[in-house]
Figure 1 (spheres, rainbow, N blue to C red):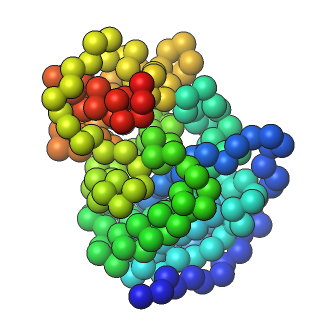
Figure 2 (tube, rainbow, N blue to C red):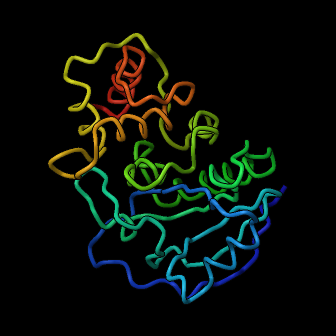
Figure 3 (tube, helix red, strand yellow):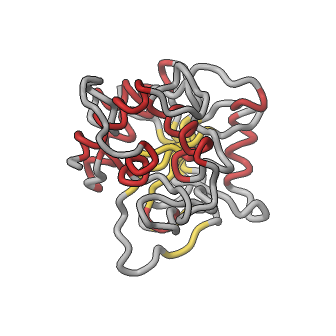
Length: 231
């Protein structure tokens, strides 16, 4: 089945910084009561927010900003030393009311569309698996989307993003150091409580238990991710 695209241009974009690589794929949920309201806001010049794509629950994909331009979706953020995440990322909004309006599982048609779209993007743009991220990964003090119900594991099985393939390895460095090696922002790089960053890590990679505590399972997951990343 071919992907269904609807052109819905947003005026909210500008030029990407010269010389900055396009090397992050950033996923969000819309966090609004309806998909229509979210699309309208992403195209509202007064809102000054946008994304490159929005994926509706029925699998329809709205195109807002050409990939060659910087969309306004990440806000104040950080990953692996970079602070202008908008400047180096492609942003995808996935329609879901979010935790404020009744967070729910993502429908099958939507997941399939997200999978096919993201697989195309990472293939064309050569985006490394470890740089397929959620908004909560790059802005843990402000954001918790796309949330613990997002199917990160299913995407990773199709070559989009990382997912721990084993839990037999042991972390030989402090957990916080491992988080920083992976890319997360902690003090002094970002003024975010460690527990908040650990919760963001869990929301992405250990969604069954999100408590901000780095237990043995989290340690083994992080060790596996660092190994898959080549560190």
